[in-house]
Image 1 (cartoon, helix red, strand yellow):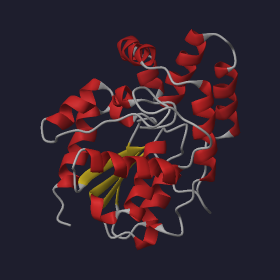
Image 2 (image 1 turned 90 degrees about the horizontal axis):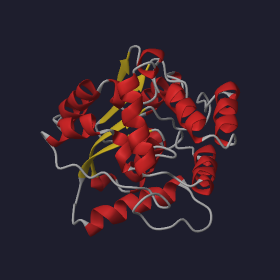
Image 3 (image 1 turned 45 degrees about the horizontal axis):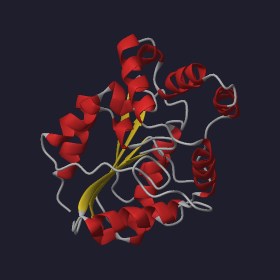
Image 4 (image 1 turned 120 degrees about the vertical axis):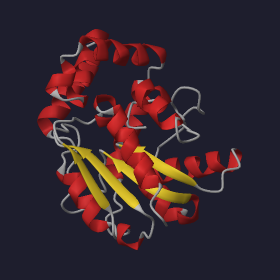
Length: 242
């Protein structure tokens, strides 16, 4: 899952669609929800080792790995450090760092920081929702209610979010991605405000034989907006021969 998100933030419609064909493992990053407390600094590589450790604990030799946003960065590091554990790799709404990549624009980042520091939880959550989805989805009252329900069940502490932001800023796999020999699918919403779609194009260009799927009109949380289509993309990609 991405920055400030928990395992609940995948959204039940998407998880249900995946469960029709997969045994789904969705977990909280360290410092979040049911996972261990965060102590000290955080790196994306460290989070990747956490993922490998979880596979060990569950006695899973290899898995179809899906990572979105910050979780997509974790998935990159996992695939690079432990390629034998990754049967297929799906990277959603994420980036690799390095030349040609771009993080959140100063304007959007300013909106996020203002909302987080406002002391108004409703304002902060509404702003997060509007930034994470397309304009059409943002206006969907039912979808927003579902998002609020998830946020209320498992909030992430501000110091943990700050540590995650620092880890994301330091992330750079761009020079190492051409080494990957794992079937890779890159998915990105065309209207992503947090990580522009050009990041998806760059990722796909750096990973040998990677396939790029751009979801027209979708925002950062494309799997909330298009749960069935997103699950179908993962399903079809998992069937690709290694």
